[in-house]
Image 1 (cartoon, one colour):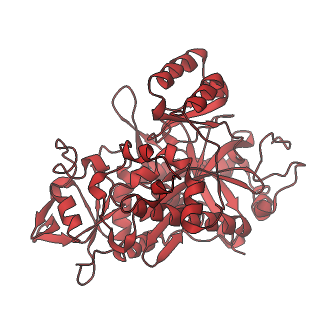
Image 2: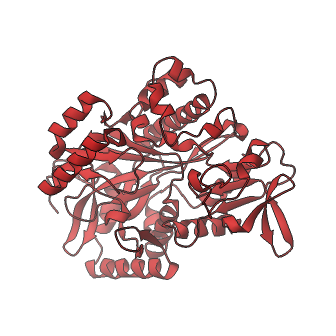
Image 3: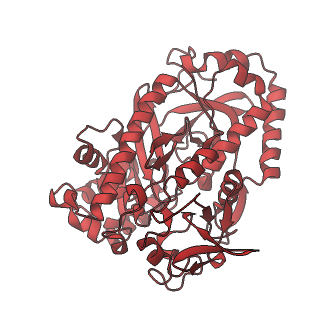
Length: 475
């Protein structure tokens, strides 16, 4: 393996020595027979295939179901590094919840001129139906996935906030389970913080958000769009792990002012619905009338205080990549504190000066749709062809408000296992956060996504990326 990485290598220091978090792992790895590791890698693939750990890729043709690639070299984070990250994530999530409450109530941040009014008023993710409506416990974002990238020893940046319906937690859990089965000795030699209690904590957190009119033990269910959704494996997995029902829109109806699910013994009331259906499809009486995925009248039940919808409708405004550029100001406005975690410098293409800069420097920038996700609809300038750059220039000129641009960051690398041994690849990290009236809980680690192609900066599984287990070491 090259001992002089161009990018910050999380395992190897610049002079080739092993960084402290990897000491014990590297000592173990150096004694392993490569053929054993190759066999284990095949075992992991077989396990994922047997378990059905797949995702759907959407393209020009019909959706294709694929196995998510798994790399058996863990990404290791020290306790000190994690403490800083966790503080920054908690501060950010707290501020986002306060921001969401504010823009659906008094809109003090708009009155103060911190955020342009048009950025909210003309935003498709802003739901007028939520104005004046307060979710139980004042919690909007019950489950958050914050995407973080690293560029140096102590340089962490938030790439984006996933406050709507963040996915990937099932891969985090299955990655750990796979590693525990394949290399149990590693977990006796390294004091790794556990992640396996996430489903139990998720159910507990959701139950704590039950609506005020709920009496007795809250009934929790997960609403899925169905088997053709890209994250259906995760919906099914979490329902099974939490011991709750997985339901589709046609399983639910309004009964006596509550949402009830069909069972063999009649209809049973649901108190907390963890929905994995987008806002537009949630209620055909309030949003898209052609939706077959939601529940007619659920928003009326919500307004009456008879159900908790997680995450709350309208939270997608916090996912907007133009709003993202204001998050440091949002943090300071609501908490009175400077943001612990930095944003990536962001150019809002809706602004003429920013658009001119982006068009002049397109080949060096990453351009994203403001409501984009999964790596779709984005341009990585340094990796784009002349035709792709020209085509994207036309998109920018025709609808500049739909895009933001960012510099191409030198993402940190973590080794993956290849035929020749170890080889560095770029990674990001999605820690998962649970929010309830009882507080904010961050699972130690999260989902590390890795760009399996050498030199690639695109880590999304839909674009050919893979995943690896993420270890946070105990003190």
